[in-house]
Amino acid sequence: MTVKAEVKSITAEPLESKAYAPFGAVVSAQADTAATSANMGTAKRFNKLGRLENLRPAAAPNLCVFRSSPFQDPSFEIRLVERHLHSTQLFIPMACEKRYLVVVCSGADKPDLATLRAFIARKDQGITYHPGVWHHPLIALDQVTDFACVVWEDDSADDCEVHKLESYIAVDLT
Image (cartoon, rainbow, N blue to C red; front, side):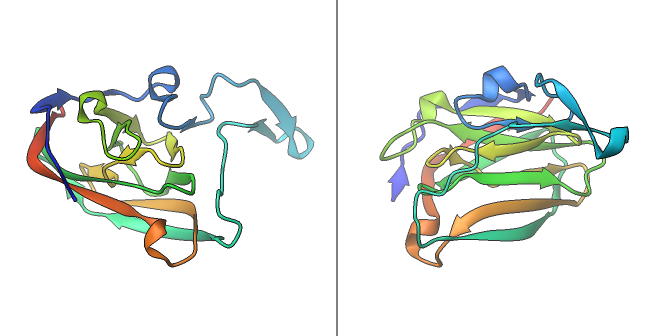
């Protein structure tokens, strides 16, 4: 299905929990959540940073790694968005020297491109997407970045729905 782009360009903003909350959670040891002592006092534990949901009992958790090639231009073109209607997706950067790009929007049956937002995540921030949140695949910036991912899947077409945009939307990264 092709979705007409209503927005021609957006500017990426720093990833912050409050601004990102409608789309998912920011996972970080810098979170607003109070830390508790763990491991005989050698660690701090930050609990309940985000909700992980599986809306299909037959789906199984898939722990996987995405290796993303870097994008280094001052502007990025969004040509598609996707969603995982029945599962949270959790991404934790494993080998990220600086930052990466997260692009999301709302929408029930189709993406609402008027709500499209772009966030620059720091290397110490992971993210979740709530089930059904439209998003562009994560974009590595500056260098190859590995992301650990957890998602519930059953190897059916319902695992991922992709919508190509009629025209691209530019994301200003400066």
